[in-house]
Length: 175
Length: 137
Image (cartoon, rainbow over all chains, first blue to last red; front, side, top):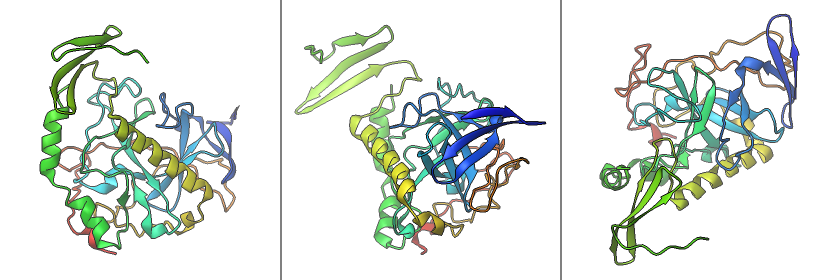
C-alpha cells in the first residue's frame, strides 16, 4: 500500500489477489474502526463496481479479503433497519447521510446466492466510517435468498411471523 | 473465568458503566438485565457467532468462487422493483484509474440520500413494498 499524489487527486495503490494492482482515490477509502465481524484488524476498504447491483467491498490492507455487497436500499421498504445513531465507530448523527451495504454470500450455484440482512454495514457519508450492526430480529435472515427458485426457501424467509418479532422485541429491546 | 454467585435482584458492575442484573430465574432460564451505554454492542452469543460465520463464508466464497461471473443484474430480491439504474453504481468515476479490461472500475463511494421510515427517500422516490418478489424465479 502506497500513496502517491497525482496532479489533482491523491491515489492509493493496493494489491488484490483477484484484480491485481488497483488504484483508487484516497478519499474513497472507507474506514471500519472495529473491522467487519470476524475481521477485526482489517479496517480500510474501498468500493469497486461489479455487475449491477453488486459491488465489491475490497480490503486495502489484505489483498485476499473482499466482500460482494448490495446496496441495502435495493431491498425496499420491507427491509427497515434503524441506523445506529450515536454509534462510536461511525459517529452517526440524525442528520448524517448514510449508506447501507448488505454482504452477499456467493454459492457455487449462483442462483443460491444469499444476502445477510441480519448484519448490514452502515457507512456514515460524512466521515466515511462504517460499522457492521447485528439486528436480532427474526424477520431478517443471514441467508436471505436473492433468487429463490425454491418456494420453500422464499416462503420461510417471508412468513416468519411479525408477532414473534414483537414478542421478542419486548423482551430484549428494553435495555 | 471469573465466577460470581448472585441472587435474583442482585447486580454486578463491569467497569464503571455496565451493570448486569439478574432479573429472574424461571426453571432453566435466567433473565438478565443490562444497563450499558447505548453504543456498546451486546449480542447473544449464538447470533454473534452466526454473523461471524456468515461473514467468513462470504469472504471465502469470493476467494474461491467463479460463480461471481454469473452474478448479474437480473436481480429479484426483496424489493421487486428492479433497481433503478443503480444508485451505487452511478457513483462518479474518477479519471486516472488503472483499468485494464479484467479489472473492475474503482468507484468513488458517492454521497446519497438516506431513506426515510415511510419508504421514500429524500429524492422523493417511492420504494414500494414487495410481496411477490421472492416467489419469482
